[in-house]
Amino acid sequence: MRFAVETHGCRLNQAESDAIVEQLRARGHERVDVEHAQLYVLNSCTITHAADADARAALRRVRRRNPDARLVITGCYANSDPEQLAAMPELDAVIGNAEKRGPELLDLLQQLGSSSRDAGASALVSVTRLTRKLRPRPWTTPPAAAPSRTRPLLKIQDGCDYQCSFCVVPSVRGRSRSAPPELASEELATLLRAGAPEVVLTGAHLGSWGRDLRAERQADRAGQGGLAALVATLLHDHPGARLRLGSVDPHEVDAPLVELLGRGVDAAAGAGLCQHIHLPVQSGDDGILRAMRRAHRVADLEQLIPRLRAAAPGIGLGTDVIVGFPGEDEPAFERTLALFEVTAIPFAHVFVWSPRNGTAAATMGGRVSPDRAAARSRVLRERVAANHLAFAQAQLGSERSAVILRHRHRSTGALVALADNYTRISLDGPDHLLGRRVRVRANALAGERLRGLLVE
Image (cartoon, rainbow, N blue to C red; front, top):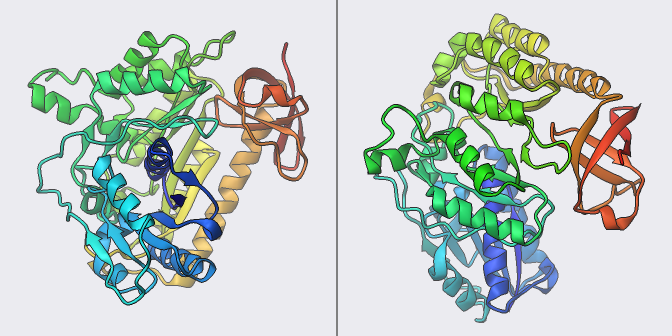
C-alpha cells in the first residue's frame, strides 16, 4: 500500500505521526507523495477555528489532487467535531485520538488503503469522547519512531488535568497520563541506537509527567519523581544522550529542573540537557491570567526568568501568548507588552484569541474587536522581533554546542546548526557533517540570521 501522512499542529502530533509512518513502513507499506497515495492520513489540530479550517482545506485539496485515495482524518479536530467532519464528502474515515494507536489502527488503515473508494458511502467514524471525568487511560502509545528527522520526538506524556478557560486539550486528549520511566528509557535507547544526535521530550502537559504514576503507586508523596527526576534518570542511564525539553508551565519549573538546565550539555561530547525551555506565559496581566484559569502569576515569571538566566547564561527562552482575550483592556495589554520588554523573551508564538466551543472563555463577555486584537498582535510581534534580534546579537563571539540539521538552507545552501539554546547559525561545511554534533562560534549577523564557524 502507498500512503501519505500530513501533520498539523504541535510536536505531540508530529511524534504520533512519526510513529504511524514508521509502523506502516514496518508492515511493508511505502510512503509517497499525495498524488500517488492510496491512503492519506491527516493528523489534525483544533487549537483555533483557523486550525479547523486549515484541516478542511487540506482534505479538499488532497481530494482534488487524488480523487481515488482513501482520506482519513485523526487527531484533535477529529475528537472535537467528528459529526462535522463525517459530513464532508471528501472523507472516508474519522478516527479519534484514543483510537490513534496500536495494531488496531494499523489494521484499519491497511483495510481502507487496500479497498476501492465508494464516493456515496458514509464516512466511518471511530471516536471516543474524552472528558476530564474519565479516569486516565493506560499508556498505550506506540513506541518512538526511528529518527527520520534530525531531532526525533519522544512522547513521554499525553492529556491534561488543568481547566484553562480557553483550551480544548482536556476534552480532545483526556486526562494526563505518563509513559512509565522504564519505557521512556527503552524508547530513548532505540532512538540513540539509530543515531539520533538529539531527542526532544514532548507531551500535551509535559510538567505533569509522573503525577498519575505516583498516584497509582501511592509513592513519592513528597513531590519527588517529577519531570526533573525523569530527565536526570534518562541522562544517567544514557550518558551520551542529548535531550531537549518541550513546553513546561512556569509554575512547574522547579529547583531540580533549573539545576539540570544549568548543567547544560557537555562541551566535548554535546551530551546533556539543552539550555532551552518553552514557558507558556499566555498573558502579562494577572487579571487575565485569573480569567484564563492559569496557575501562575506575573510575579512567578519575574522571579523564574532571572533564576534561569543566572543558572544557564545564554539560555533560550520561548513562550506562547494570547492577545484579545475577553476582558483584555488597553492597560492589561500594556502590562503584557511590558512583561516582554522586561524579560526580553526572544522566541514567542503570538495568538489572537478565538472562541472554542465547550470552553469557559467562549461565553465570557468583554470581547475585544478583531481589528484591535490584530493591532495588539502586530505590536507584540514587533516587540518579540526586537527581543530576538538583541538575543542574536548577544550570541556574537560565543561558542555553543549544536546539531547540524540534515537539510541545508534552501536559498543559500549553507549548513544550519541548531545550538543548544535554540539559536540557528548558518555555516559552510561538507555533507558529512549533516546530523552531527559540533561546536560553533557565531561571528556575524546578517539581518536576523547568525553566521558562524566550526570550532575544532
